[in-house]
Image 1 (tube, rainbow, N blue to C red):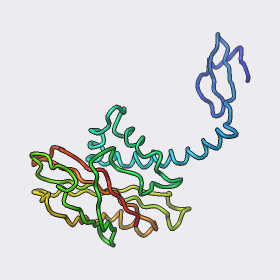
Image 2 (cartoon, rainbow, N blue to C red; image 1 turned 60 degrees about the vertical axis):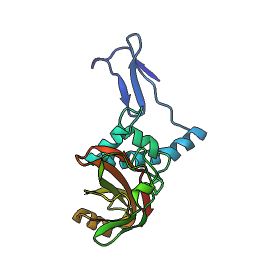
Image 3 (cartoon, rainbow, N blue to C red; image 1 turned 135 degrees about the vertical axis):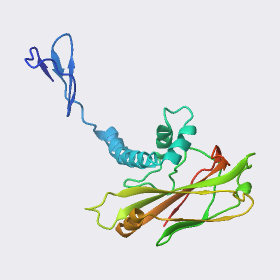
Amino acid sequence: MAIFCQNPNRKISGRLGPIYARIVKGPNIFPIMTIPTGQFYDAFTYKYPRFKVAVKFCSALSLYPSLKALNESLRGCFFSGYHALLSKNINFVGLTAPTEYNSIAVSGFGFSVSNINVTETAVTATIPALDTKTEVPTGASQVRFICAVVYSDPVEAEKDSPFQVTGVEKAVASFNFAASYSFSKNLSPYQLNLGTRYQRKTVYLLSVIESETGLVLQNSQSASAVI
């Protein structure tokens, strides 16, 4: 630790790399921050990569207005929907990318989807009759399907980041809640290009039950599949 009794360039405070500057009774003190070692270091090196993955995943999801608004409404005691989503996901991500155990919604009713797939042009899935999954609210009219496709395992790891998060959305008016539904939504040119650069796709899909005017009445958890 170094103490400067005089500083011609005024006092310094704050972190300077591994050094933290603070003023104590006049002099500047520059203690060197300790480097984690032993068991604490092992825990830090294990958790930090996952924390980075979770932050990138949740930050990217927050860029989609419908998904951001939905999670904001579900945030509970958390400061924001983003922080609630981060708390839900942080323990389920992998070292380099999200996994099928992650979620794009903070909470919701149970939701199972079959035949999730990413074809050459679209995301497809078979949605079960929603009235078998939840008590359909009074005034329910349409369903909005929100989907995130995470591209990971890059073909050229030296050129592309470990994963990319993209989204698709589809609203179905006058939805029949008593029948299964064949979901299909075309991919964007950007997503089609990512499909040639990444070898793994993880799809997350949820349903939002809305009134005729678009008021959110209920939402599901997200179902997922690895393609």
